[in-house]
Length: 476
Image (cartoon, rainbow, N blue to C red; front, side):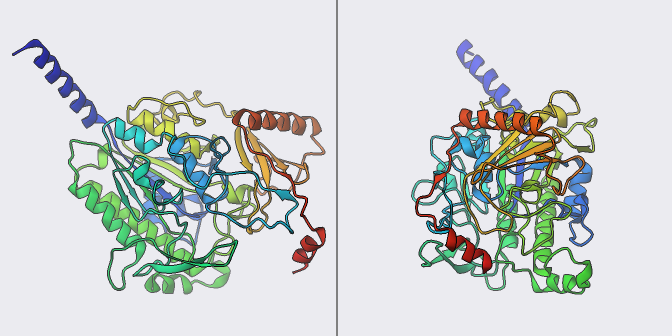
């Protein structure tokens, strides 16, 4: 046998062996799931036995954060490992709720699709030999050039530019009014299914089919961003009856919302069962998280303050669970170090033995492997920049730094500061900015330095602002 051919065969065998050892990866991203909306997170109302079992078998991060209080920026951070401010993708898409009369400031500029120049997690994994699948909500741009298939995914099922399905029931059609004009836009998240089908179940069927039919010799990355539990709040009637039977005083949220959460839990249980049936469970890394806090009208985020759209804890603190392949026996049951959406990118690259890329995120693998307990500095700062308005309660344009137990919020309208000790005041009720002026100023300086380093787009005064219209709006 010629030497060159022998070398080629040895190399091919080495690559095949290495890829066989690489874990499959499933990233479950639930839409608008609150920090306390799971049994393992303390809920006595929502029923999530499969997710709870996943947490029991793996590692739960108790200080995990979404990169933004609304969906699109967080999704961009997950797929690029970069802060939304660095990406200039800081608002949900397409937005359009700024009012020239009612808002004191011009919003910061932002992109309305994920740039093709960004190297996504899917592109990195595909280069490393992975099959890459997207099932569910995309919300990072649309046709003709910013869909999942344009950003590294071999398969795209139900991913488009819309942030919510037309309906969770077949045929999944509905309308959405543009905030700027009120024009009704037709949308349909998924074109499959049959009469009486429920969207979460259909997408789960698609995921299971991909897993069952896939060649075991090639690892896969399944990104499964659910449309649930986002509005419209539409639960299965049989599950809604179960939660409607609970006395109102004992409910954490709407029965329809509870039904949607249980349906997601059932979906995850079905996907995990398919892994076990196909013999892939032991070689699959499972990650579970949410894109922002729970919706104000659907659930209670207590003991956290506020909700989706707000950058108090209720809007940005989320569940985060790692389980399955690669999670070391010595890994702790729970980790209270502050982590953020950007950290998923380098962590997944580490687990899959893929080349590392420069990101804003930090590799959590040493913590999850049970080694390198001091590898993650608890005082390493996390940042947010949201130069926008939305209609969610307790929302306002802000920039934020969290360092250790301290969280500083800068109002981008007034420059006012809020400082909270999250170890002592998880509900953010006691503003210590005036009491601890030196610390507040130090953190604000560090926040300003970070904004300059990522070229965070600022807000500017709005000359068309009508103070009387704002006052009238408040009276309403």
